[in-house]
Picture (cartoon, each protein chain N blue to C red):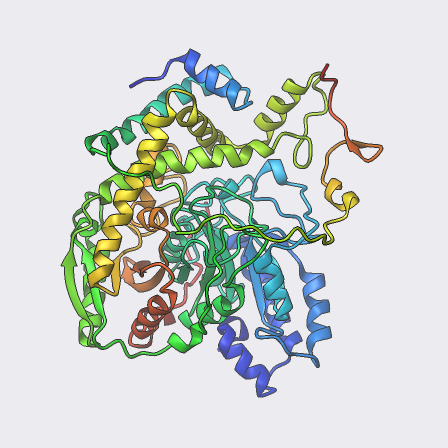
Length: 486
Length: 94
């Protein structure tokens, strides 16, 4: 196997046994990127010079938990001295003066940052077509989208351009692209990982997480990035377990529920459904107890999300006014025009759409009718989950209703595009941890299964994901980077 | 329900966005569609449901007011598009 195909743990073992050097690893990663990124288009910015410098320096001083191992970041994480664009014209030239907490933790453990990955502008989208720079392609079929908004992360990891990447997930932005690209996407509980330095989209739902090719690499990274951060008031101060201790294939006696609503919903592809049922059978063989349950408010989750997310995003994006950072209209002769012109030139269509919608539902007279109502429904959705988790350990669903769609297929209809997140959004509304792992292929395209756990039971989610992975071969398939890019 | 052009213009002003005539028409259609999609929430009786404003059972805590270093002023301001004498420069307000 080529170096670029290996996971973090495997690379670590090779380093420990002195079979390879840090420099060889980092060079092999950049070689791979230069070979395939013209097709995949995962990266917005590469940091090759710094990465190679770091690699040379680290060769004889490896101490950290991921010393000498490469990682990449969705371009929503602030990186000191390295531009952080959010794939927006607004932040095209923005160079932060600090690292996001999750990033500084990876740096402290001597990880090597390779570059910044493409995404939908300001993390709003499900296809990575809404990047202001270029769309990213799905390595399994270059005519298809990789999903989004962390599409650059999932595509890069699937294409062997980097073993792991940090992404962010507000309504499915880690899990949906992971499912579309046949990799592992882990969204921890709300509050588990610091969001300091992660550009905000929807503050009551955003959470940082990991995209990797192997479940064990998610655990390894979680050990570093999880935990309280005084700089993030929403990060919780509770004990962080050693997540690698959950990497155990034994799941006998685990009680797994599958909600009927997720399988009966209109628009769910039959092959996707069948593959998730097949996976549930596998769990049964491994000794788990599988039962159908009901989450009766499921169909209200996406409509509630369509109110809450734009409302909070419109507030968060009010800071882009052309004064302190970002794009500025220098021609305006009064401050109001400067605000309006800068914002209109800096934001793309979907971002404007969500700002408009959010502004409307928060406006006087509409606040109770829309925003408050949605927050009440959010309580009902969380209550559904709480009730199931009194009796069951985990919930399993498809991650997405379909496999990856073709570029351009859904870009004209916002509601169709939002529909991709129908199974992932309820998890964010309830703040729960969830993972998407590969569970088969439909017409050559990967299908993802979502495993949802109770709040802060990340370990249990990883345990079940690891058990499935160790007993199946789906994760071993590699994309051929075939198909003609559009 | 359909929004009017006037409503879309009012929202755009509140959001500090300029819209072209075509964008206004698009937004009338798209925002109406999305708002219609959320109408189903009214099927649910939520009169006695406490809104879920914050997902975690956390509450405000106070810390001691300790002086500690913060980011350098020059660094913070370096992202500003237009600076003069250590201050952000904007068009005349009054």
